Every structure is written in C-alpha cells, then in structure tokens.
Length: 340
Ligand SMILES: NC(=O)c1ccc[n+]([C@@H]2O[C@H](COP(=O)([O-])OP(=O)(O)OC[C@H]3O[C@@H](n4cnc5c(N)ncnc54)[C@H](OP(=O)(O)O)[C@@H]3O)[C@@H](O)[C@H]2O)c1
Image (cartoon, rainbow, N blue to C red):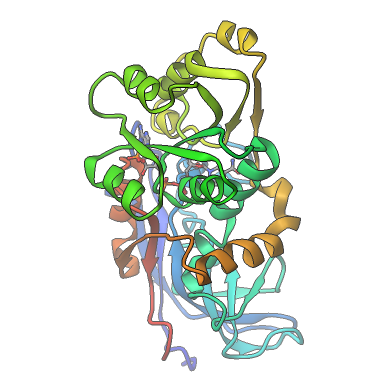
C-alpha cells in the first residue's frame, strides 16, 4: 500500500453527449495509486477546474490534442499538492497547478506545471481569476480591447472568471463597464460587488433595447464570451472604431450545428475590428496577471466568486450545471482538503 492510501478514484468520459451533457455522459472507476519513477512526482488533487472548453473535447470532431475518447479519464486543470517526489525540482508539500484531470492522484514529469505560493493568494484562484480564465479576460481586454478612459466596455458572461476579470479591469483602467448576465442575482452581484455601471439580464426583455439604454453612445469594446444571438445583437450597436474580442462561444457549445453568425455590414459601417483570443498565446503574461490582478485583489479593488462543489463524485453533475449556464462564479470541485 502507498502512503496516499491504495485507491485512486477517477471519473471517466463514457458517452459522447448529444446536446447538453448529462451525468450519464460520465463513468467512474478505481485504480491503484501510482508510484513515482525517477524524474516523476505524485500529487493529490485539491481543486478541479470545470471549464466550458471540455464540452468541445467531448466531441468526436474536436481538435486531436483535446479530443476525449470513451474510457479516457476526463481531462482538466487542477490545483494539487506534491505528496512524494523523485523529481529534483519538486518537494513534497508544494502546491502546484498541474493537469491531473478528474482523479484524486496522478503522476507528473513536471512538464507544464506551475508552482504556487499559498501565502500570496488562495490556491484555488490559480484556476480562476489568477489562472487561464483570468488571463483570457485580462489580456483580451487590455491588449486587444485597448479600452480608453470613459469608453464603454460591454462584457457577456459578466460574473464568470473570464468576464469578471475583463469587466473589472475595464473599470479599474477608467472605462465604463457594462455587463450581460443570465439572472437577476448575477446582474445584482455584477453591479453591487464587481462595480459594473449596469448589468443586463439576457433572459429578460428586449436585449437590443436594454443594451441601447445602458450604452447610449454605443459599445466601444465588446468582450464576447457567448457568441450567437447576443453577438448578433451587439454588432448592430457598435460605436465607431469599436473592438470586438471573441473569447468564447457558450451559446454554441451544446448544439451540433452552430447558430448563424452576425451580419457583418454593421461591422463595416462602424470600421470595427473583430479579433479572436486564444489564451495560450498569452502565457508569457501570467506573471503580469499575478502581479497586477493580485495587487488589485489585495487592495480590495477586484472581487471574484467561486462556485465550489464538494467531492470528485459530484463533478459530472457540476459540469452539467456549468454547461446549462447555471454556475455562479468560477466552477470548481473541491476534491480534497487543502491541509492533511
Ligand atoms: N479564448 C480563450 O482562450 C478562452 C479561455 C478561457 C475561457 N474561454 C471561454 O470564455 C467563456 C467564459 O468562460 P468562463 O470560464 O469564465 O465561464 P463562466 O462564465 O463561468 O461560465 C459560462 C457562462 O456562459 C454563460 N452562457 C451564456 N449563454 C449560455 C448558454 N447558452 N449555455 C451555457 N452558458 C451560457 C453563462 O453565464 P450567464 O448566465 O451570465 O449568461 C455561464 O455561466 C467560455 O465561453 C469559455 O469557453 C475562452
């Protein structure tokens, strides 16, 4: 038997979903806890990140590097603690970000691993506002959106880790941030806690009329996390020389045929720029994110919310909730306590 115990619970991808994933899209098994070989370490998973991206990986036709096949352990980024190391660079007890996937224990060679200082920020933030979602929101907004003081920045999925980072960064650099979110509770939180000037509920009323009222001078920067109907509506409301940052397509993740795109004539008239962001292109800016957004958090200027589900066995249900847009804040699963 291993020091960690002898059982490693894992959640597997079992069935390609048609439409929104359901708990039956997943299976489970138990294996022995692996033992590290030379140059490897064993870590225990503390937090598992649930990300909309994994819906794409469940598709048969997704990019090969991402694609999940039935029987695979579900993939995912995790915060973990090194338990036993035969790697010269990692000591037992260290906190790290590593792609353990949906399982309690995993081996790593150290490739792609990020070390965490638990005294600088709660370790769970490394999967949210101080991790890849935060990096997409921060770099997309600052480097691609280039908001100027006084300009109007509209952000969809405004309370999630990507949107709350883009929206608060916009406010902090002097722009007027307006959110779009999916419930009255989310909209209330966006204004009260995150400091958006206004927040529009995309599930209630005439979306175009609401955006026009909240953005009377037009939209200078649209940070798009959802695509589909919301994007089609916003392109008609762009200010001259607007920038549209295409970050996510939540509306299309659960449908086989993507919804039709927006008509591009208004983009031409506004001389607007549409630009996609892929966060992997900005990994060199992670230290900047940690420094800048970390200092905003410590100064009380920047808030975030986590939607934490307890226990690995609850991960499938929590992922299905995320894919229905019912998460409120960064979707995480607490797999084990931070301290033994
Ligand atoms: N480009 C990149 O490199 C990159 C990196 C990270 C994430 N992303 C993308 O950025 C987006 C936001 O990611 P996140 O991690 O911050 O997620 P998130 O906002 O916590 O969750 C997704 C949100 O999308 C909204 N949504 C709108 N329409 C939806 C629909 N039809 N079905 C399901 N959800 C819907 C929901 O918020 P409301 O209820 O408020 O509408 C839902 O909570 C995602 O599309 C993600 O794939 C892109």
